[in-house]
Length: 166
Image (cartoon, rainbow, N blue to C red; front, side, top):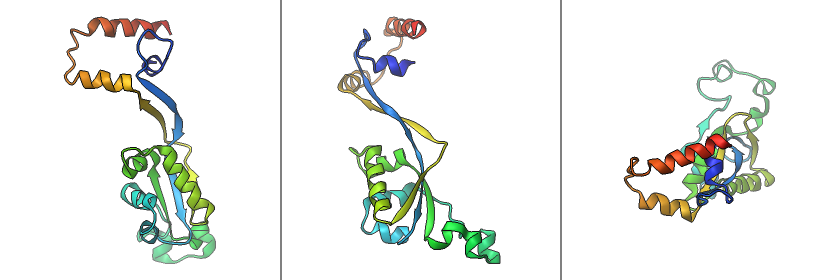
């Protein structure tokens, strides 16, 4: 693929990016000790989850258990927790700051899980490719604010041929 060519050190093209891996992106946290608002008062990761997360709690106002009542068995684990929130790990890492990476989100979530604040789950769906653009890539794109594709056609054709060879 074009990503593997741009990240290959043995290619005749300069290495523009580093492929760090494919990571689980869709996370779900169940808060066990505090509400998200209380946790957000002392944890930056909770503030980010509040901004990008979706509350999927079984006890929401529209839930049939909420309107008709229910037992702890019907509520399941949610009966003993505050709420459940789904969010994107990559989106959350962007909200943490300009130098934050998904690994920082994972570390914070694991720390909170180890302290008993939350239960962490990753969904089977929703993965993302974690890329880091190297200095060569940054220089390439900064030099070409407005790319003239006609003048770079030979380079694009050459790249297409390399992709076909793989």
